[in-house]
View: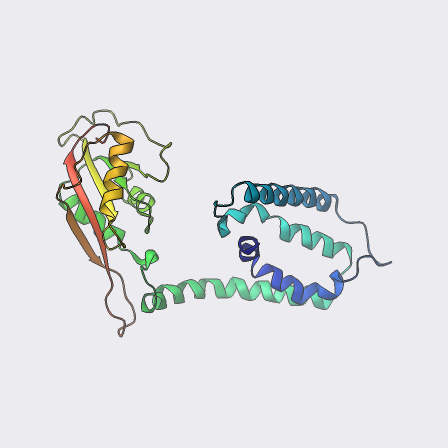
Length: 262
């Protein structure tokens, strides 16, 4: 319920504010027959809700995140089709149109405000990690290509490093069944056969151990846990002058090709 409500916010608030008078009437003489797709979408939503409920009961430890509720994307369409069949007042439609228009105007301003103000109060500041600077430092270490194995928590390193190294094989322990094939010619040395292990060094606990466990377990790299590593640091972009500098720190191990990590 929490995930579903979160995904549908603020639409459901707008709908209640604009159409509560129309929706409270289950049937009126002025109602017209609803669009046929209203029934199709309604059945789809019932099926999705039922499957989700059963899955939640069978897998109680599985965390249903807000973005998983993408399956509810058609609920606004269904609700507006139902509202249309009840012949809403012109004022209700104008109010709804005004609210949606304000959202379209405010959303870009909200993103700009978030970029400027978030460093003042964020903890890990995941959205502000300077991946471009860190990628340059990785190249400066001598990484020319091969395989990158990066941890996925607490920061989403694999996807972001994949964007910075588009021609490199990037693997995430979060998806152990998704292992791209070794690139042709990756046999070690500087011919694109290096092994790079990356983790968030400023994370709580011992982030290095799961990183090494991931590369050893997935690719048989056989990297010892006591292998020396390097720390790469880069300041996060801070716009507000009174906000203290925040630093992103990555731990890395760079070796020649080992096992299938090459």
